[in-house]
Length: 379
Image (cartoon, rainbow, N blue to C red):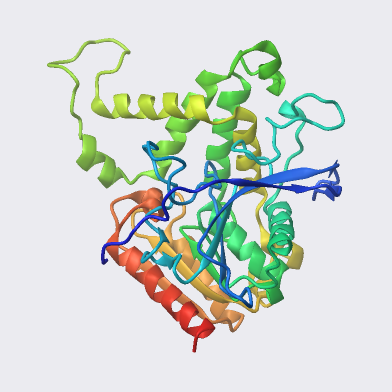
């Protein structure tokens, strides 16, 4: 890839929706807020807009930095920016923190306007369908009738797929990356183990830990450590850490001896300090519930017949959490539904996390697809 620049310093914007919003579970929020970041310029006919949907622990901070001394760019900075695959010289890009998140959108950390206290565990369970509806309201806010593309990896790809089915006339392209048309039983099991680690933490207090001045750090730490293992490839872990010990010889105890143990504990500790436990529970349930074919007698082909968008589907060879076979399942259904689909399977050592990495063949494939979208806008 040719060298590309950053979008630079970015400033988040919070958008308030004052009308009541009824969720799929029947609960109604009296109002809600979504925190967003935008990059690039919306063109005159508002046809060049791209929505970036985040995965489980993602945020609105997709690209750029928040200040000059910011050590870390947005989570998809390799993908979004001037000269990058999603080129902000050509596209107007919108990132958001989903409803129920903990990065500034309405969620468990927000104040419940009906009580004046933080929602905590009282924030209702949300679904991918709920998110897509709020994202449609966000599009209305920006005056965007139709997205040039909606894209994301993992849970973000699920949102792109739901968009294509629920709002077919408002989407021209869906980029579904490292994702699946629904979770496998194994993935649901992983999510439940992670939730149980949090819920059974003595500091959880039935989700009202803030009122007790605590955080269920141990549960969050274990949940993240287990999740992190599933996001990586065995080959990648082996190459990076092997069976390397931190000191000479075995210590014959239960402290940190292997380098991989040190790495996982560091990741767990860091996550427990930055992410809200109630939000983690909400996000994993949204993953579990995602099944767009359920509204069409569990017929994925029938669900996809609703779509008018063209599709880009990508998977990664060592991703065992959202394996290439799950993308094959989606591609077969798209072909059977007579939809336009481009599929790429990328050889990578990064496992599920590969969608966040700078694997050159992957970035080139996305760039080529986005180039074609741009040509549609400027024939």
